[in-house]
Image (spheres, rainbow, N blue to C red):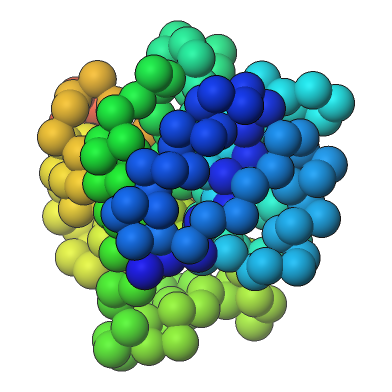
Length: 225
């Protein structure tokens, strides 16, 4: 089972989620502030971080950015609001998924497992070369013009999925199912936000992408190059 770092300032919510996730077999470490969570992150080396947005001190968005700067541990954000501000803000900060509170523990558990599965797959593929972009599917590394590209697990998963069939259009619904394991069309903003982040890392000119191209009204296509 996974080592989960839960960063949540509301003691009642924190205790309830800790109890429920332990019952699912996870190993829990908890923190009530972003500062404490970042200290624990170095000590316990979790498999995944569950992060509240509204925290005392530094907020969840900033904590997420600092987690990203420290490594590639997946982050699932907890938000009290499902509006675009919190959701898009969290995704742009590098979160791999978000869950709107209140959340049923079994739903949160399922979302954590989905994120963890995504990080574990695609471990036995070949190396693909697209111009100056090299994708090593075995090592799960990406290089651009000979330099390593730092991608989050979800960004890497999205790139692997799109580049698996260059020239083929994949709808947002297909990408939600394959990358995020979601079926809810309303979550297409997950795809859009992640595509934007990915373009800033692999494209020479993100506003004129060569690799991850939009097919208006349908979805996204890798290439043509």
